[in-house]
Length: 253
Ligand code: MF3
Ligand code: CO
Image 1: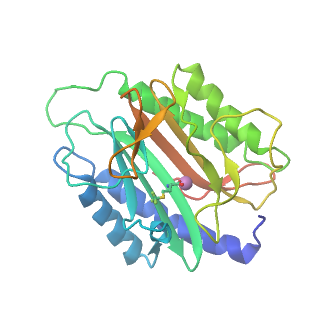
Image 2: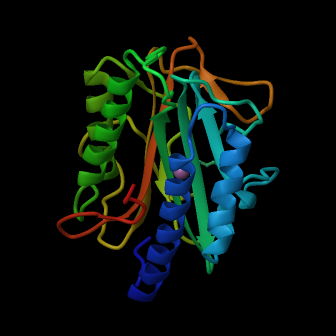
């Protein structure tokens, strides 16, 4: 839905809070810290800036963030499990500010103090590709393009590097609710789907895995993990589609 100037102002404010919370949580990632501790850091920052927890609008969900580690891909419940050097950690969070939602996620490697590079090989490149795919998807969020242009840009980058886009979960419109129309898959055909208009708020997501695209739901009933046990990555930003260029609301990491 196209948002007016007043609505966009509030969505931008929401995006600033989400950015700040995600940044704080990401900066805190280190050996020995847990997802629950990161969740607390993000939550405190959201409240400090006058925001609310958008994920609490999802029935049954109680956290500020989703945190996924290694083979987990998306919707991870933050746990007390401490991170180890070389772990691949993704933090996903959304904010509600005066009724307006923004959503963002980022993935990082847990770095150790020593020179030990355990588990690092290949993960750097895996993360680089996800970030690049998100950037290329966002570039397509301009008036007159279609949703499929975003999808196909993401898919080409991810598959071009030999990884897969997870099919089970998708990006989405956002605004008055966390999830709105249209769905924005990270896979699809150019020139298909809804025509984008300037002023639409979109949560563009790259949800991908190193191996096959299949995911399984873990025992907690929330967390999706790569079925083949490979790695999962997550990059998401909320943007406003523009006439010439998308405005990224949650990017300043
Ligand atoms: N961040 C997810 C999304 O982009 C939503 C997580 S919902 C939760 O759609 F309930 F798992 F938090
Ligand atoms: Co989302």
